[in-house]
Each structure stands twice: as structure tokens, then as C-alpha cells.
Amino acid sequence: MSRLVRRFRTLPIRARLSMLVAAAVAFAVAAVSVTCWFIVQGKLYDQLNTDLQRGMRGPGQVEQARTALEYCSKTPQGDGLFRNNYSQLVTESGKVCVFDDSTGTVEVTQSDKNAIKNGDTSRIHFRNGTAADGTEVRVMIRPLGRLVTDTGEIGPHIGLVIAVPLNGTQNTLNDLALILLLVSGIGVIGAGAAGLAVARAGLRPVDKLTEAVEHVARTEDLSIRIPVEQDSEDEIARLSRSFNSMTSSLANSHELQQQLIADAGHELRTPLTSLRTNIELLTRSEETGRPIPETDRKALLASVKAQMTELAALIGDLQELSRSEGQRGERVQMVALEDTVESALRRARLRGPELTITADIQPWFVRGEPSALERAVVNILDNAVKFSPEGGTIEVQLAAGVLTVRDHGPGIPTDEIAHVFDRFWRSPSARALPGSGLGLSIVARTVQQAGGEVTLARAEGGGTVATVRLPGAATPPPEAV
Image (cartoon, rainbow, N blue to C red):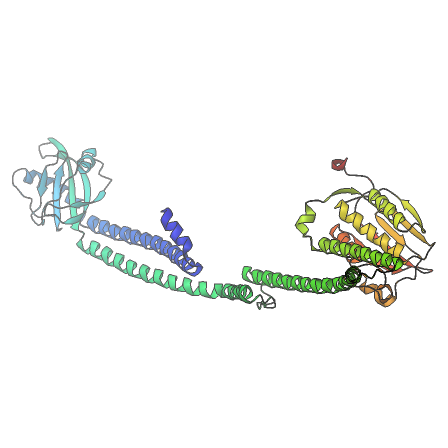
């Protein structure tokens, strides 16, 4: 059985659906056919029972039957009172008296003797039996009570046994069984064909989906889409929409990946070119024996160090952007945002010692990755430090989950605000300054993953104000205490 189940599971879905439909129809047709056959058999037997009862033409035949039994005790046969194929009288002991017009005798069973001995003349018993010549017959047993002779002598219980052949009835039932079998076979074959047709029609969208998946696997073409009816809400339509959504997401991801690679290559080219030029100058000086002036040599080494630092920062930013959601999810925990802001402020004060940084920090707890949140706050503060004039002021405030960082620099032009969070985007006025153009992109991604939002806008009176809103609470939840 297990082998058959395994083989069934290896069949194509169309074949399995067709077989299941055919099996279900076969079961239903078999149940109906068997029920019909038994109902017809019962009706035919009821008709035979009625015909057998009509063979007894009035109560006077009971007395005639008793007289015949007395006559039977003296002669081997009765005198032809009943016009039936099989007619006989039977005593409670099983003694049989056959009438003259009877075709033969019917085998008497113990149940017949018990019914006759019981003597209940109001009950008539029916059964199927066999005649002495082997013919299948329908038998009626009619108890007649005790035999009472003319002299008043009480004899044994007697009963009348009449039977008719079942040949016609059996032939009818056999013909009916053959017809039902043929109809059932045709029905099962038709159901199998219909199931196959329905399976083909129902699985046609799956075929299209399979072809689309194979096409994507073969060509890596993510632009393919499966047509779906707008009003359709069945499982196939949902699967098709999910596939289209998946390929669209993969296409966007692939496009972003290609763009990231192209932008990263472009950003890496400048520091690498400058680094190679400076190193070639230093190498040529060593090879030719013509020393570079000490001032120029120190400037070259400082430039090399700055470019190495810029490359390291760019690689770190690229690694941050390439991290998957699963890697981030493993490190998410309850974070005291005020501690994160304080740590970022210490780093910002070291990078801008000539600036005045004021802070108003209130407690706020959020769920996120501690290092990513600190990096995001540091990037916002670095932006403020980078664009603040010497001796300027930076104002930092954290209240009710809203972090604002306001500088007093030149501000962002209105037409550039929409691009500040794009990867590798840098304002034309800031391209001479160090940076990769990924800082604010990392900020936006980190804040969105924490369930918040970040905006940059021009501040009244000049400068820029960065606003970060993060969901959380002013007090830590019980599990974080």
C-alpha cells in the first residue's frame, strides 16, 4: 500500500486529479447502483410475496388443506387443490404431503418447522429456498394450526408451503446488474475524462507560471509578468500576483544592486586614482634619488592617509548597506536612545572642537540595533559639524522620541532636499568636502528599520534642521529592566 501511495504521489497533478475524480465518481456510482439493485430486488420479492398470497383463494382452502393432509396420510399425494408450481403440506415434524399439480417438493428447513409448530395462523413467513430438483424458489409458509379430525381427534400442527421459481426474478436482477455495471463504467470513464479536462483547464495558469519560472531561471530576465484578471481572487490568481510581485521586487533589488556597484565603482575611482598618483610620486622619488621637499613629502603622506581613511569609511558604509534584514533582526534589542545620543555627541565634539554643541536630552527607549542607531546619530551630527561655520553652534534636542539636530550653516537648497537620502548623492557645493554620499542614506535606512522617519529641512534664520522620530516609551518596558 505504501508503495502505491508513493507512486501516486510521483504522478503529475493532472493525473492525480483525474484519478481522484474518477475514484470519487466510481464510489458514488457504486453506492447508487448497489442501493438501486437492492431496492429493485425488494420490490420484486414483495411482488412475489403478493402473488403467493393470492394463490390461497379464501379461508375454505384451509379446511381443504386439512382434508388433503388426512388424505395424504393414506395416499402418497394430495388431490390437486392448489394451482402452483410447488405446493405441499408440512407437519411440525417435517412430514411432507405434495399436491397432485405440484412440480416437485421444496426442501423444508428447521425454521419452517418452528414456524409451523408455533401455530400462529395470523403470520405468514417468506424466504428463498431450493426445490428438490435444485431450482431456486421463493417460499411462503402459512401455519394452519393443529389438525382436528372428524372424530374430534387432535393431530399435529400443520402448515401450507407454496413456492414459485425465481428464474424470472433472477434474470431481471441479473439484467439490471449488467445495465448498472455498464452505466457505472461509462460514468467512471466519463468522470475521468472530465476530471482530466478540468485539471488541464484549472492548471493552465500553473503551466504559465512554470514556464515563467523556467524562463527566469534560464535567462535571468526579471521583467516577465504573468497576466492576471483584475477581478479574479482565486488561489491561482493570488499565486500569479505573488509571483509578479516577487519578480518585481527582485528586479528592483537587482537594479539597485547594479546601481550600487556602479556608484561604488565611481566613488572608489577618485580616491584610488589620487592614492595611486601620490604613491607613484613617492616611489619615483625613491627610485631616482631625487628627494621630495620635506614640506611636499609631508603633504603627500597626509593626503595618502586621508584617502586611506576615506576608502575605509566608504567600505564600511557599503558593508552597512549590504547587510541583510535577517542579520539586523538578530541584534535588535531595547535601546536607551539618550545614551546613544550622548555617545554620538562625545564623538562629534572631538571632530568639531571649535564648535559649540548644546544638548537637551530626555530619556526615551526604542527597539533597534544599538550600533546602527549610534552610527545614524553620528552621521547626522557629522553632517552638522561638516557644514557649520567655524565657531558656530549646533543645537541637539531629544524629547518624546523626537531627535532634532539644528546647525547654522549655509543650509540645503530647496531643489536638493528631495535627493539628500539617495545613495552616493552629494550636493554640488559639498563635493569638495570629504565623504562618500552614503551617510544620510544609512540614516534613512536605519530609522525606517526601527519603525521611525527622518526628515531634513531648511531652518528659519539659516542652516539645516534634521528631525528623527522613533516609536518607543519614556520608561523601559518590564522585560528590559
